[in-house]
Image (cartoon, rainbow, N blue to C red; front, side, top):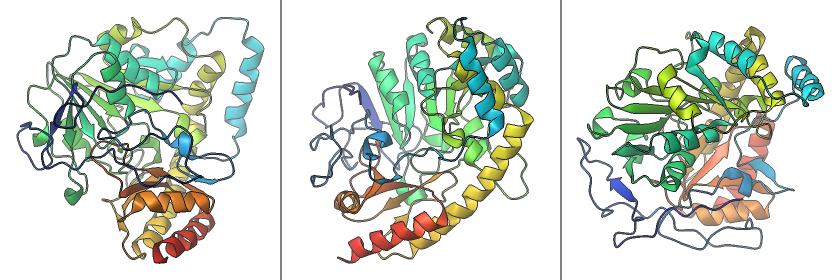
Length: 405
């Protein structure tokens, strides 16, 4: 697991390259860290703690991800990748692609397929080696931005990529008392780069598309991380509720997508960006040659087809039922609070002493995702992946015993 330096903490406890917007402030006003709980403290570390876990610090470890938690031998509730047998319509093209590895990858068929899925011309699609590469391209290509803002809590790679590229990042921390819901008025009016997840990892909050779209304006690049958009569903709503992937009318919009989660392709590294062709050309200019492998391109084309989209909707519906079961079981536990209204493949909970609870779960064979490495959270937060009801019931039994001890 790689580690990144996110800046040396200044007198306020935040790194020198980060400015914080305090929850509850309006109009995008910024202030010091006063009144914001330090989110990098860690709980007790036992022998079952994953290797590489840092000691207590004031600043969250942006390089920490759930794969570090899911060590062999544990039931994995830390990683949000669906694990199921690969369907033939996906496995067959990937396998066939192995016979063409002597040729350089040709991205055109996959780009055309992805473009057709989202109702865009191919020039408005940029294929990437996973969504994470997209964040690096954005950070490297857009070095001229003056006031980049990242809305937290969210996936930490966007801020990590910006910091690594030398940007001075400003954080807007959403309020847990408000269910981590987005208030567009919180975003500074002169921010020329805004990055937000929808649905957001780790909160599982799905912001209304209108609220996210309200952040778009001339002179600003709005990056919406929709890596988990295909996990969402709403009764009576066809397709992905609140997605902006098909919107071509919003100035500066960049939508980041991933094929990792639903189809279990984390090891293949495939994602893509959707946006204005001229903007994507700027990002492609800093991208290595042939960044996406031939098997990954085959996967992208297959996952963009009608059969895949129909299967995604069925998977999202089953996921919603499994998530409701998990939320109901968690809500019944004393001292456990489910954050907001979960809409994706994971649930964020708050419980006092969660850092020690996580260690106890590891000792009992269960891996969950710590929350204190996400800006805006702290050691009393945990993220739990949605699994089938039988796995959930077994997990809840162990969690209840730990909480009662």
